[in-house]
Length: 187
Length: 258
Image 1 (cartoon, each protein chain N blue to C red):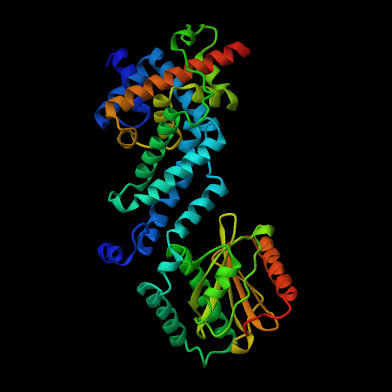
Image 2 (cartoon, rainbow over the protein chains, first blue to last red):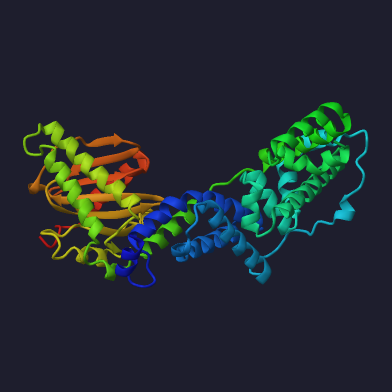
């Protein structure tokens, strides 16, 4: 059916059956695509533009998609588009590089960290996530916000499962420290 | 299991990524060691903070609309003067379905129901089957002439983009009693199909509003045309849209081309 469709459609267009497949397989993950873009980019406009660019790229190359996990496929395209944007400086980075040494002060005994984390508010959490370097932020978002498995995350971020695990672990330590220190400053 | 082992695997434990045998050992250690239980509790608190304050987001309607627009643009108007084979089959299937549904001998009510079924099927099929437009254009002066020679009437096409209902294009469809024009308008991510055919062709009987499977259908007879509007848009906005159409119809002195 694919072959027949291809033979009847002019170059640069997808067969109606392919478009229908794209709508059925890829479009349901538009929210997930935007979510990843929004957390990896620094503002709404960049997220919108990069998600749009990624989806159009997905549409363009949909012919080549043979897998069964459209979500991972489209998220990988979004993730790569975000990296490209960040690298080429098309966006305006505002995130402050997180200094692990600076923020790694010991937690005082009188403030159990769990209590501090419980007190974390939206602004603090978003700020701490935004302050994570991109390679830590992406694994956290894919895991915590989008609930993907280590294997899926590894495929999207093009890293081995062992690296997914260690990055997640380091990312969480950074988040926990950042949130505790924000809470301590406020108390 | 040592505390060091526990700590090293705590993330994977909470993420449900450990083999069952290791999970058992982790749980045993968790029950026995207060320090590790505190680490565990701290990790859970972080997860809760993230879940609560860093939620999954919804794509903005504008993004969704522009992707849908890009999909529509994939179908080049010049490439589809003839309907693809599968569309003919789909159209024929509806036609056969309607005919088989004892169209002519049915009661008025059953007839109206068959009609709304066919219209709804056409709308839904156009959404599922890749939003197929036979002519994709926001220009009424492109869409209207496209129907020349394909229909024995010339449908009224209006530019309502200024009112928030941009024209997306049109398609030729087969409903009940023959070929009809379906004009397609957009409202944010929603798609509105407007079916119209000469009133004298009938059937004109039918309820003014139908709600089925989350879709609203509105029906009225303009002096010359029978109109049906189908969309998943909210009924308030759909009413506003039909009023815009009706006003545009009255403003046009006569529907031309007839």
